[in-house]
Length: 358
Ligand code: NAD
Ligand code: TYD
Image (cartoon, rainbow, N blue to C red):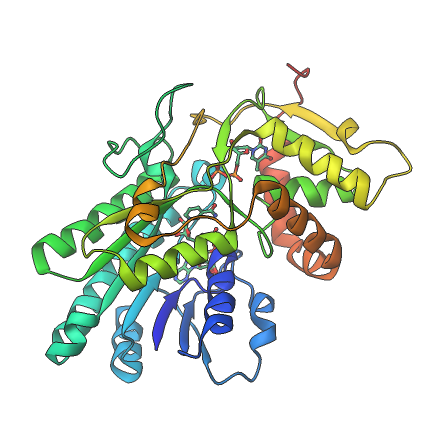
């Protein structure tokens, strides 16, 4: 079996669902169920013996030791993290605890487990670290996209914590020989995306007739990838990636935030027209994010050259599926918009007094 950490979050739950749809190898899913973890994402696996869920923290060494000894996974795919840049600005401590200290604890437990394996299993073992393109910092307009050899220049507490974890993973390979691979992926979107992030927030706000808060001038660029393409990229690297190597995963799809928001509005105008008028009327420019990275873009040629991976979805097909998923899952949205969610929205947006559109 494989151990997945953070498998009740956005990408982790998509990964677990896709993994079990593609094969029969069981998954041990370790997740602390923070505000971002949601077992409803996995409810289609209820009663499925291939999925074993354990609620627990990656920083709990005793729990990790007992799970590894009992289940003897052949690989660990490490998603668990605090993942939202704005939250890292408000409260960085949890990012250091989970992303840095938690990854350290998981590496140490993995190393101890790996050392006990018989030689064939030792060689086959993999620690797959799931990371982000944000570790590379911000690109100037027209600068070449991030390759795997781009310098690390993290700018937010989130990206600094992920960069730190990437360095730990690298060091555990070079010093102890732990068989690791790392993937650095661009912004994902798709089903089960928590509506604190740009795309799901815009969809759920539009449907509720609420303002669509665009930070600053909305010209910041991200390279969007449909989540199941990220999952297939991880499977490809887990199966065939070179030990100690990193692979960038991206969608070849750079877009300014304001254009993403307009695309969502246009799709909603078609799929769920609002009698009050086009959804674009709700776009509101608000105060920018401190230290806001201007542009990310991934050069995904290495994973294509070495492993034959390319995204299957275009942005047009992926965003249509995503908007439709949110229209079809109003109950999921209502459930995640709990008291804690409302507190966050209040905290993050109350201070951003609306600017005139620029
Ligand atoms: P998410 O916030 O939706 O989910 C994180 C999951 O980790 C949640 O289920 C949460 O309960 C769990 N978790 C948090 N702290 C934990 C702890 N201490 N112990 C155990 N579980 C814990 O995040 P996501 O968007 O699914 O991102 C998953 C991974 O992918 C992260 O490592 C993130 O850095 C990386 N990544 C995300 C994106 C993106 O666009 N979302 C892009 C590239 C890389
Ligand atoms: P986000 O989804 O938080 O991902 P990240 O910051 O990790 O790239 O944000 C994507 C972009 O959208 C980013 O440039 C910030 C911007 N943004 C807004 O303009 N308004 C919002 O309400 C949010 C949440 C994000």
